[in-house]
Image (cartoon, rainbow, N blue to C red):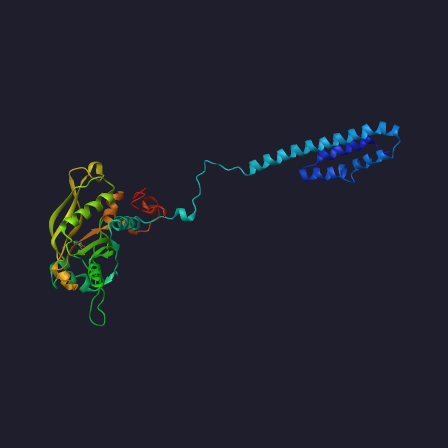
Length: 360
Ligand code: DAH
């Protein structure tokens, strides 16, 4: 006859020795499973005489109960230890900075961002965007814009000339976005309302000039487009772009071959503490050139100046970007230094719109 005490000691020590829940399960099946040692003992009860059963029954049942509860207790202990181990292994330091995904780490260059801002503002006023090539003919960059051959205004543009082609024609890197005015007027019928952002080139380099820079041109041609419209548009633009309630603008008479009359526009600002602010202060800062499109330019585009008139303006994008975002030097704009981009660049999803705010 099985020695119940010995069996119990043996089973309990196996339970104790089990190192994980799977090992406990093996012991349980060996003892309490269908063919387990304890289950076998329980089966023998049926073959006993009532007296034997009276004596052995409680002993075997007691053994089964103790083994069962030892197994349950061991499983609890092991489950808790396993959980503790997992908690240690999978611990995260919530104070560590979140790792940005590559898409989130990319930055939009301030020039691209400012072009998006300009476009949003002028689109709201009914303007579309026109573009032209960086390599331009002398005719479109100068002659069609009423720069007579040999006129000193040509010299002022510090033009980059390309080598003469087979016809002896020297193309230029466009010195301004104005040639796209001609391209637009010869390819579209008035009414015309376009802005023309793009790259421009001049032989010039210092803290505020780079050989390649950006301009945005505006052009409105209609039967009655006049200076008052231009003034309103430019003021609305400046308020929206610099995100101020009011701007004061000053139109100073100036000269451009392609406009008559011509003006340079200053906006009022304060320069206290080395920081430029708009909508306050006593200083003036030049931001753009503008004027009524010269009748010769209209004629060069096949438009009758007695029927159509309009206005145009040109503005340095890099310059207004520097003013808006407080960037002191223009040269790093084009150095592709990732540290500069991280500092001054914009997040890809900061898409400017007049509804959600230009800069959020
Ligand atoms: N193209 C001129 C420049 O680069 C800027 C300019 C002035 C453009 C007056 C215009 C304008 O359209 O009307 O200096």
